[in-house]
Image (cartoon, rainbow, N blue to C red; front, top):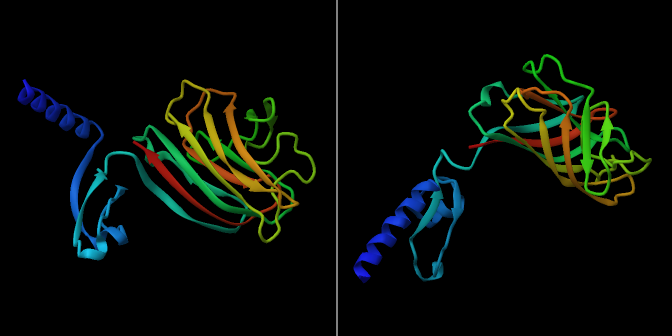
Length: 233
């Protein structure tokens, strides 16, 4: 009976690992520390000081999880535009925005969507709902960073240390049957360097796909920022 149980457990373990697209691989310590040969999920190094030369690592295969699609920096630009027409195979997209600083003080960071590959971007019909406020409408785009009330001093500041960081998730972006939804998480420093937490959800009131996005401030240029776009398998 015990042997039967162990065989069944082994089969179940194999099926579980296969379903999550993981595999065990062995790497040298140098390769592990450099993370140069793997998309690492978990590394367990024991007794490195006592001469361990390699480790076995549970790694995620290339067809699972997040896939980096584009990345870069923005400087002294009116906006950041990303065309998504080449990413229709993904279930969703994750846009990471870090260190986005405005040239103009006290402004909102916005996101607009397009249905024609970025030839034009919609500027009306956006509704954003924040954790601490009822739904409100902006005629410019989804509010990625900035207060619901739009009160003076409550938006993103432009002092040397002030900026906005956010992660924007768009799921099922290829569907033309639904109104597009976005999820926004992050934080920013306002005009008095006060910390404000972002947890917003948004919808555009029209059934459409999303095949391009544009990030911009409500007034003035983007002084600087770093971005990365990931595909969700």
